[in-house]
Image (cartoon, rainbow, N blue to C red; front, side, top):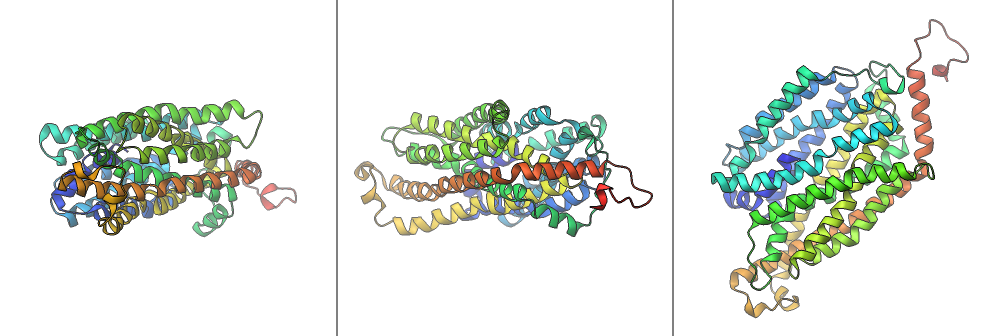
Length: 451
């Protein structure tokens, strides 16, 4: 996430460097996530069968080297190619790390550790905006914003290889299945017959769509809106810094708040996990709508609404991961993580930057002749440059309104998840118990594995 938002924090400079429009800028992120989602199932298959520590370290190493290499590319074609290579490396640890946490902790402790792990999303995202913007300003080139993270990646490789101990699969739950006994085809069939997995993945896909769009275009959009307020001059770097602080603070509060609320209410409602996710998204939607509506009228109100909207959006990160881990048996968890990544990114943050950018570009052509006439802003006080910015602002604003609808759709998916989650959790526990039994030397009529 640090790299993701480092990139977004200098998006305007990258567009100037390569002379590209919003849709092509969005395609840079799409290339990264497409390779990420394609290779996630491969790492999921390997993670259920081979040494996860080595796979994860190799992926982080590739991520670091390709990120560094991409920072030296000065042509759009080669830069987008390296962005795709970065996605391959990131797919490894994103797929495998949650399953290792699952094998080390159980129940409330696992929820807490997952919340700690998913702090990486808001903290890394927030730091990325700050580091990206200020490294570019300090050293005079946006390329330097991508050259700090590889050093952190190499440090992670060292820590993984020499300090991390890989637990036995299912160890925390009393199961000791060393590897999956099913074929790849059977794993897919069993996963996609699990309604809780499918529906929670659909809900998480909506979260990824919204997060990807706001993270990628947020600073640029807000800066354009703020500059339309008479007498206000705002630099994109300053907006990136403040946007990063908001993302960090919303994550620091929202990520642990989700599992805390779920744990507080669990004794009253066994289906509370997907319900918290649903409520968070449904509340976030109208707040984000008004946050997108206000940049050209009130800076402070816009920042406040953006913080509250992101806070409710962040409630679900660790809860969704926990849902997957208790509705899927240990021997299929890496594959489940992989396919959740595949679909959530394919239809989520892989597509949202490009789609939002494409809608924005299309709306500019539609709005340009009459946008100023319909605007609440007095166009007579705007220079020709500002009038062009006004058209770009409204086109991006209308495109980003799509994210509010997607949040409501995600909330509905989580409400449907609540209908099936108890049954799927019980089924996963039964299968995990069977996997922990010793292999039979002969057939026994009451052996649960023969049912």
